[in-house]
Amino acid sequence: MSDPGRKDTHKPGFIPWAGDPVPKREIEPSAVLYPVPVALVTCGDIDAKPNIITIAWTGIICSEPPMVSISVRPHRYSAALIKEGREFVLNIPSESLLEKTDRCGVISGRDHDKFKEVGLTPVRAKMVKCPLIAECPVNLECKVTEMKPLGTHEVYMAQVVACHADEKVLRDGEIQIRKARPLVYCPVNDEYWNLGSKVGDYQFTSKK
Image (cartoon, rainbow, N blue to C red; front, side, top):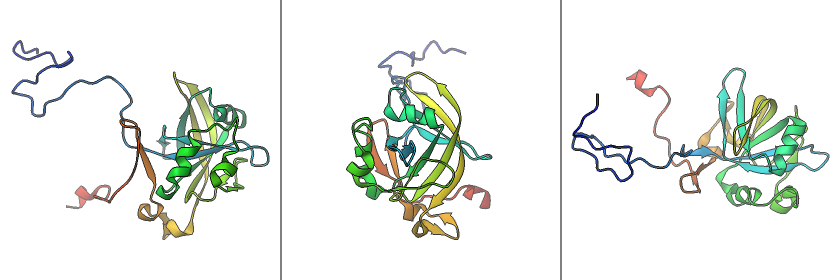
């Protein structure tokens, strides 16, 4: 039911009324989900000219079978390689690779051999032709199952067919975030961040 005494919160610059528990202001609709993971995606045959693209539009889309997605602008050099090979490797960089990660996102594989120029090492994968990046502590080999144009980006949904992790980031076979030290990206301000400190465990409230 509408309240004739309440200001229209859909108009820019509205003044919250006294009943609002927390004053809110409507902002321009945009993808302000943050933070998002940062990944170095490798594509193309390791025996030809493989490429690296820095991706932040990525995430888990299914647990069983394990599936992830990445979104790429269709005019990017990597988009053609992924569509042709229908596979890629999702390499998760540590914060020590920040400069190399950013550089891979601002030069094009059409004109640069990113592995040589940036100083990263291609390693043969187990299930796909695309290389792993040796310097990244975690690598997910992926086979594309579906491609869908959405607007500015095309989304590539893929099944994870093999995973690799550096021994130094593992404990009892599980990845330790404190050791892997992944990067995240905040699209709100175009900034890279690290994860800081752990604040809790999943389902910790059920143990009280």
